[in-house]
Length: 268
Ligand code: ADP
Ligand code: MG
Image (cartoon, rainbow, N blue to C red):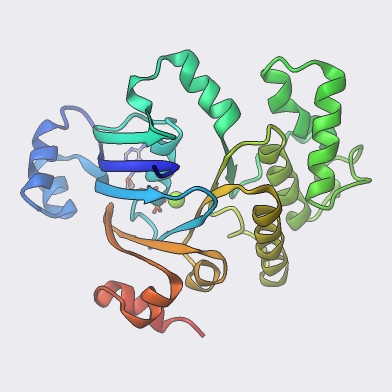
């Protein structure tokens, strides 16, 4: 059993999506569907597995459905069609309480915009999610402090976000996601705003963390260098659909089509 199993997953944005779903089945294009129904295809019948402990990279141009897919994975939005199983449990069949439990214990999300509260200290920022979960103060402080140490921010607990560089702020975002020790980290363009050198450092640190902490990581990027560097496997998306899934080597040596080849040719 894979950690995450996604089957035939689709997301159509807009009212009355049935006709658009039907058009997807007929292999009509995203543009045609938009023209005929006024509806936008976010994700088009995606089927894939994420294995426990792997770094699974999702790559594609802007608008190809990466963020929509990852938002479906943690149920920030509901699918129009298809299934997602987490450790063998169907997300669609879970009630609100069970879903909250999943979000709290099984997966955490790291965004490109760090989303830190400017008037809270670094420690308070990391504690915030734990506080919402009702964790008591001493425990919360301990977890948040440990999590900050993990990302190399020991000693910065009492500073405020604007006293930290972009790279350090992203570390705080990572510490916040790690604080409740989730099985799965969902990272949506988490490093895209960082300058190249800091970005490389963060990639290395993430890989170290992944090895020592045994996380399953779903990592979105539109950067092939980054994907090749950190991905165990890479999934390439176009117009909401999956074009190819493979190891970095597969993607480089046997690009599935012209779209993938274009990505690959950009590598330096
Ligand atoms: P990516 O993250 O790869 O850039 P997105 O998942 O954000 O792509 O977007 C995929 C498609 O879904 C795009 O065409 C986008 O315009 C559309 N989309 C995303 N979110 C919404 C929304 N809330 N309402 C309508 N369309 C959306
Ligand atoms: Mg996106």
